[in-house]
Image (cartoon, rainbow, N blue to C red; front, side, top):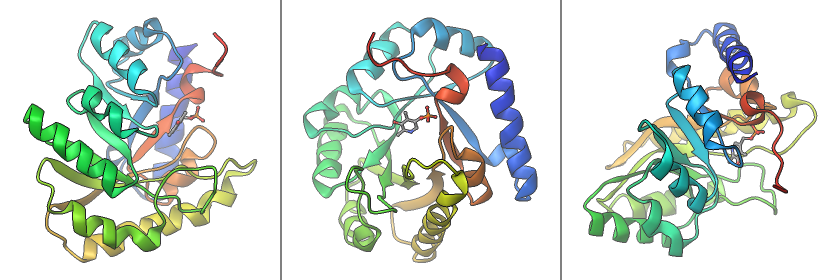
Length: 230
Ligand SMILES: *Cc1c(COP(=O)(O)O)cnc(C)c1O
């Protein structure tokens, strides 16, 4: 099942790239393995998947410690400041930085461990009360403080689009994210890189790719439905 699902997702990524005249090499697939057993990850590793996304610090650390081959772990869920110390040297990319306070905590812990933490700024582009992420109107204020934190490297932006029946409804949000990324890029701010745009999940990754996503986070499409009660 995992093998077929992975093939299907990869083919859809290629098709979306062709539609948008993009190179599939410019889109990284992150397999969102939250709630799924290590055995699923081990199987996907044999198919060449190296990027995994987790939304909980504890689960990321457990899988990090126990996986048989080193792979890249992406923290995609909300990060509390008191948990930063556990993952700052384990996550290859923290997608969910949504406050200056969190950025400063990451800076502090990364300095202690003598690493540079790669991060994305999470933007709540649809202004949903239920979602984390900053308001795009505050982005320059945040970047202005972060640019001076030298154990942090801003690599781009991330968003979680609304849950919608028809993915077309999210196109406008993905377009806004892409425009925001280009605006920031054009300002050439020191220490701020805008090469990654993390957006698109099982329901809407094809539309996200058409609108410029460079990382898509796909869980259900690869692993099947999640059961949170186990
Ligand atoms: C769970 C999750 C995903 C994957 O969701 P699917 O709909 O299963 O593809 C992507 N991004 C984030 C931030 C998530 O928490």
